[in-house]
Image 1 (cartoon, rainbow, N blue to C red):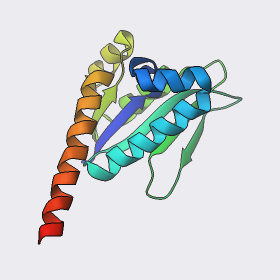
Image 2 (cartoon, helix red, strand yellow):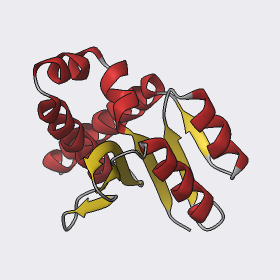
Image 3 (tube, rainbow, N blue to C red):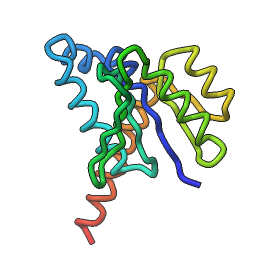
Length: 144
């Protein structure tokens, strides 16, 4: 059983001031910065990370780089929420699923399917702790 973290990307972008500032300059800047942070978190934690963005294409798309995180974009007229809900409904019985979102309805739906939900603020603390732990382990290895 794997551990998956499904991230409502826009919840984080609008909850974190530095991401919101990037988004106000150019949406792609915030998206790329968030993907970079999520990839670093995946590299320093035991979670596989999935980011879901509201998209504008004609159909849902998934983008993955080898060793990177999975990124989904919703289709035009579809929301990221619907993709997140489908992922949780499909995989919560097989994997440990944690959803990062501020959306109350999304939290309730994920919980109903057996997922766990955390806020972007709690997730920020988890990211900071994972980075600190990684830095401690790196220092310890350098001393050996």
